[in-house]
Image 1 (tube, rainbow, N blue to C red):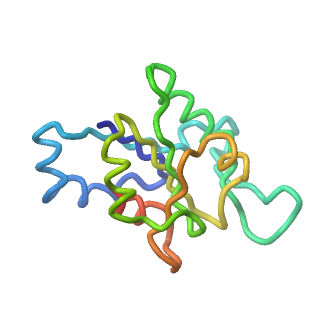
Image 2 (cartoon, rainbow, N blue to C red):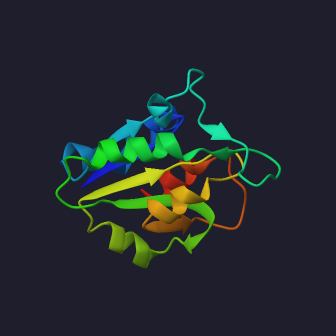
Length: 149
């Protein structure tokens, strides 16, 4: 299995992925992973990944362009489309059954969000699964992704 992690904060994963069971699984080549900072895919001169919600509202949301471009880049050589998992509070609660289902995949892409949410086009056009790890607020999708991994 290969896991791509789309995140603005790749350094958050180092401790989790380089110790304990996750490290042993990598040493056995049970899975590989890659951090993808989707800020690297922005096309604007300020490298912004957020914008005001279309139609108004408070806060900022992740803009779709860098996410779309990152996923296109990660999947262009894939024979089979990967599962694209969006960590979000309204997603399906994570369970043992879901963990077993995902463990059978060859390629998973996790999208770790920040701000007030996502541009709805990300959810509608890219995402295959929406997963929540509970009914509480986190700093971003990274912590939930670590739990699911």
